Image (cartoon, rainbow, N blue to C red; front, side, top):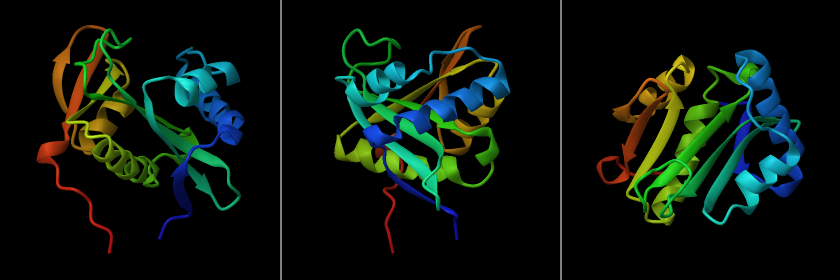
Length: 164
């Protein structure tokens, strides 16, 4: 039994998602954009956005969230057009509680609904937690350089999750 639920993120969650990103920045020292305008544009209003799910506890506090975009031609990540692009953000206090796995189950469902064949995760080469997470979810490295490691999850070879 978990002490959280997964649901679609809503515009009313923006400040909570900002808080998750701020906690990650505080814990890792990685300085990335994370204000409300950035979150709104990146995870809600982006034309390639396909899904954004959030894990919330019983008090409706965000424990983490995961976003899925469609890789359009000339996308910011240079991902193969037609694939999905995933981003995972878990509050450090919520690590090792199954939040990431539950978020990915919901994201896989969204990727299948949108007929995405493959999901790309581009992770900083120094982000050992992120690299381990995606490997545990079944992503496999397909490209790397000194800055990033690119992992892919092929939906055709992964069995669809069945409820019940």
